[in-house]
Length: 217
Image (cartoon, rainbow, N blue to C red; front, side, top):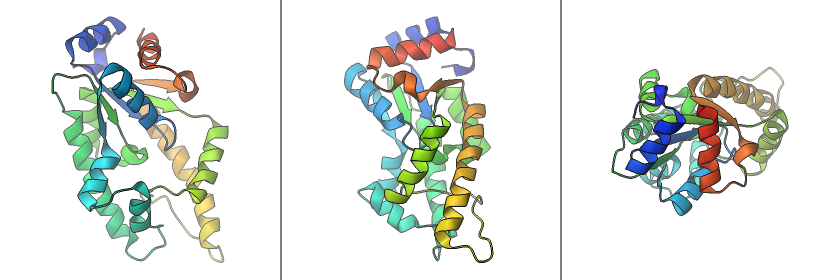
C-alpha cells in the first residue's frame, strides 16, 4: 500500500480488498486505542497494540506494572530501562508496519512513537496511512494532570532536566509540557493527515473511516 499517494478512492479499494493499513499516532489518551477498538469490533480490522506487545515482552500484565518498572527519569536505573523500552517499541513498530495478513489493519502506536529511529518511522509512513489524532491546548493540560494521578510509562528521551533547588515534582511539571509540545511537532510532521481528535470522539467505525477519507480528498 503506497500511503504517500493514497486517495479516498484508493482507500476504499484497499478496504474492499482487505489490504488497508492504518496507523493512529498522537498523545497518550488522545483516543488511539479506543478508535482502534471500534474499528476492530465494528469493521473487523486487525488491531495491533504496541503497548500490549511490550508488556508481554517484559513479562507484565498491565500498563501500571510497566509504569512502576520504568519509573521517573530521577529513578535509579531509569536510563537503562528507558533504552530497553524504546528498543522493544522500535522493533515491534517496525514489524507491525509491515503486517499483511489479508485483513484490514489498524496500528495502535504509543505516545513515544515520535522518538523512534528514522528508519522505523519511514517504514511506518511507507506502509501505513498515518493519522494523527490532534488534541487542543485544554486537553494537553488535562493530560498533564492525569499523568500525575494515573501515570503511564513515559520515555522522556532527554527532555527532562532538574534545576538547583527544584523538587522532583516541580521539575516533572515543568518538563512534561515541553516534551508534549515537542511530540506534537513530531506527530504533525510524521502524519499523512492530522485530524482533531474531537471529530471522531464518539464516531462509529463507518463514521471514523468517512472522516479520514474526507481529509484525503
